[in-house]
Image 1: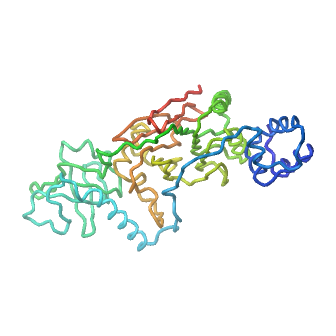
Image 2: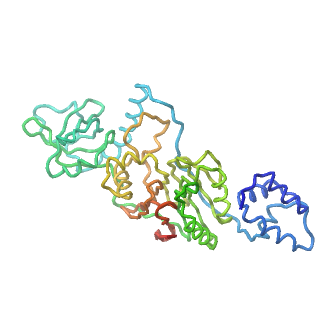
Image 3: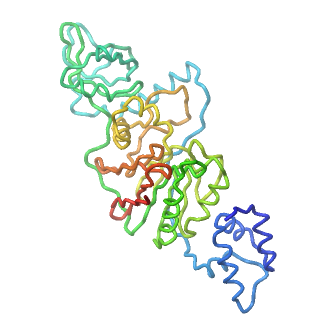
Length: 401
């Protein structure tokens, strides 16, 4: 099907003797696969209307009224540009204070003090500090808080955790001074609470997560894509959210065709990826990353281009374990990139119930302390995606190979 612009949609209906009101025009512009079906239905009417209203569209196509409860609770705020030194310090200081609140009441932080309070007599103490530098050869860190900086070395029993650390993250360090050298005896990440309520909806609510179609790629798996369309068109869920997590295509027409193929009674959410043009489409268009509340379930959704450095740092970790590492840090992009925001979009001041990302082209799923972590496949490698029922929190694997 060739995608039509709005004047072409209007002309097609005028040829049949019908005008479209604005709501019907917007509907058929995004759902062009429904046009011929609707025109066939309208020809069968005893009295054909001259103006097509959306009420008539819903009646003839048997479209159910949407009763969706979705709220955007966190999104990317305005980027302030390349940071001046003063702005940079202020931004990182605000991050430090936010992260400190996650750690300050931990009972396993023995004798917590600030760096400037360490004396020659201090033996056992804990710090809440930001990682300034790493020395891989010595397995040491230079850490800092608001009062100063300090070099710490890792005890043998925690050296395995050293490789999980990245610059600019904030963590708790249980330390002991040995012959003038500060040794880290235990390492505490901000992490998410062990005991918390598993949020679920009262009724069946289905969320589909799909990404990385790359429809303009030579490697695009069209047969798998057609299998996906065949499946999604047969769905009849009462409440159905479709999350399209970016990298659909460089071509705007591909994106419009794809969204036009999705069920009319679904709530369609588009989160732009790196290759996608700027386009407002679906019921809700978001930037990467965003946090939403679907009824009472919090979803953190990412395309995930900003995860690329962590693939390099943790090259031996799978996609879901990269996300798990970052979830434990309560910050999904801690390495500072010289960008500052009005509000840090990567800081996890709220704990997500579902944490999902595209980008990796690698399908995976796991649960951690009540949080569901998933990564999606792609239509250029592994066309495997996920469906979650928010009432049961069941993860359903959808394989279109």
